[in-house]
Image (tube, rainbow, N blue to C red):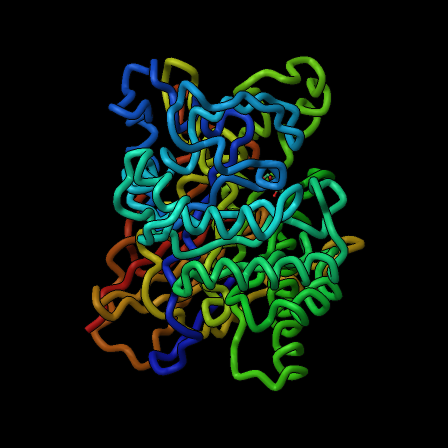
Length: 495
Ligand code: AHR
């Protein structure tokens, strides 16, 4: 099969905001305890953080990490995670049925974020709590005033403010599973009032309002809640989790096209409110939870009561397959292609919980299949996304989408590096693709590297000892061949 990508140097979608390569750490399962924090681990640093994990995280060049939840945040008292560790309360975490020991809180997490080279995206509890706790938290983290909460931070050993710039106004507040979930009107009102007081404490912060959770819940919710929050927020959140329940890889990968519809729909809704309000302000998207979440669901359901009210439970420990890595690689291209409106995104999550990095207690840390496309997107997908014109054969999904292009691609011009990077996913399950890349308007183009992620077995996984799914260098020849069901990165040197 043949396919072609044409771009023109002058036709760009926009500049990529590096924060689309963000991630997420929630107090859930073994993400924090036994994940990033394990004081008895042989690699633990002076604060009890695992340095083997820090090294793997650093390689991903993650600019921003959302914290502390997720569903967890909707029942969380942020104050519990501050000050003298020996005095911190043990609490029931009603979101995930575990015990939160509070040995890690914002005091520690902001330091861990520095150690991995990221900034923190902080979420406040608008489920069981509200605007008062939210503004106190902003004061504690960011204020330089001689006032109670800023002084509490100083007393806890942090003279300098944490300087957290991005704040989420709750989490998935539209969902009945959320503690304190609300109607769009209730949430819109509370989020707007919370935003007001938070910004009075620190008028440099940027705020994310909760969008409807997922494609099926989006639309009306955003329209209603933005009616309240539009003047006070900069971003609306989007969340997506992918599955392949029918073991139909073609249908699974076609869900990437649904993401396109989802982003376009939420953007259109934001702009509809903009029109209604005759506002000049443009609301952007924070796609602050996305990933595959499937493999652990049955097991977690079966064990739900077995280890309830313990700490560091094995929850959401998806073992990712090669086909999941293809989805993650494809999703990153979609985000890059929407860089004009998607300014932040968080791969949910980062360690042990639906994560690219896994650890064992007292032992190894290793990378899952999905680590690899994320690594390349984050480290090489920087600059301007060019508008790709894609010529490719298409397929139809039974009882699903029709006209699904076999080729998914994004093309990024990094002027500083003198490079054009082409990411390309071949969704054909049984046919290789011969790809032509036409870089119109560029001179001196030379293909210098072709990285491929391929395994004949779509269900291949990585584990603590073996990286069955790992990137490989493809020898550069006269023609570019994208193997059947493969993810690829092509690097061109340009003048
Ligand atoms: O990432 C796991 C969970 O998925 C988060 O806690 C929640 O926000 C979402 O439903």
